Amino acid sequence: MINAKNIDYKYLMENQKSINKSIKSKNKAKIMEYDFKIVSFKIGGEYYGIDIMKVKEILKARKFTRIPNSLDFVVGVLNLRGEIIPIIDIGKMFHLEGSADSEVKSIIIIKIENLQLGLAVEQINHVIPLRRSDIQPPSPLLGSINERYIEGVIELNDKLFVILDTESIFSDKEKSKREILPQSSDLSEEFFTFFSNQVEEFAGIHINEYNKDIFRNLYDEYAKENNIKELPKIDREAATNIVKKVFSQHTGTLWKQPYTDNFLDAVTPKLNKICSEEVRILDVGCGDGHEAYSLFFLISADMREVDIRMIAADVNLTAVSNATGFETLGSAIPSWINPDKYFIKLSDSTYKIKKEITDKIYFEFHNAQNIGSYNKEFDLVVARDLSLFLSAEDYKTFLENISSKIVSGGVLVIGDNEKVSNIKNFTKIQDENITAYVKN
Image (cartoon, rainbow, N blue to C red):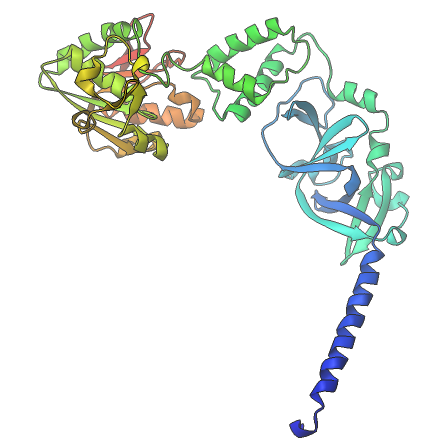
């Protein structure tokens, strides 16, 4: 047993400080020995590394555009802040065993002089500090990668890391780029796909079979105006402006004439046949209320003898909350709307919606993918431009679900530039200005 009375605590404390100082000094010296770092990654079950000084950034796997007539190991290209980046599958490039079955989870962006490339890899491991003196020269026995493309090898924790020499792999920069990005006069479809991918990423929307035609027309205009002969590069501002051209008329504003007249001509004759006492309306994607109030004002003015029961839904909770206290400038209220009837005048220029109007519209947070959860049927469903915010599969599901929520003779209105063929149980209303369908 240790006799605590005989312990010199002061000595122990000073001795411990001396030991700690010695350890820190040794660790610092050891750290200072590291003069090289690699980004390590995995391909086909094997471990590789690249000089960290060649790595510009690391991205999660994302959508990129495949290009025909390019080399087999070029899996596609992406637009990274305005720069066209070819994506290389190193596993395919060197025919590495097991690489064909591996899933691309990360992209390493490297820069060699003026050439930027993305290396598609199965898994990023760590940034590993090394001493150059510990790196062994490559051996011809390493396998399918020619030793002239290998900077060296090192064994760490029983794992062999092959350090690739990116300078040697892509030594002829311009030749590499020409081979990776072939120029062809017959790449219009691939150019459009690349254009679409950029618009989707920058604008946060979906381009699918239900709205693809209008985007194709806009791309053709863009390509002609900009004399596009290679992969088109667009930025966030350009993408936003393109999508604005796709949205239905008066998105984000109170509806104006003649759109309102066209809407009534297409829709109210159908509603008059089935609605004698009330009209039940669902506005999907109501936003901050412009569309919902436009609908309410329009139907209430045209169908004066019926009671309006309306649900306005959106996934943007902030927008839905703001809609209940909707305010607008007097100059933004179209002439067909009577401001005294629907609004309170807050100032010379600002108007606020009356409470008795908001009490007749139920604004709620609701996802269009869960439209089937409504336990009621509707006479009119307005879902303009919804395909821009859903995948093709989700939009198809929405159309299937909404079919069971609209009464026979009821109307579905979709976006001006949306095209839907063969909706089960619906017939398209023949109108040049409004895209609408009546339930059989």
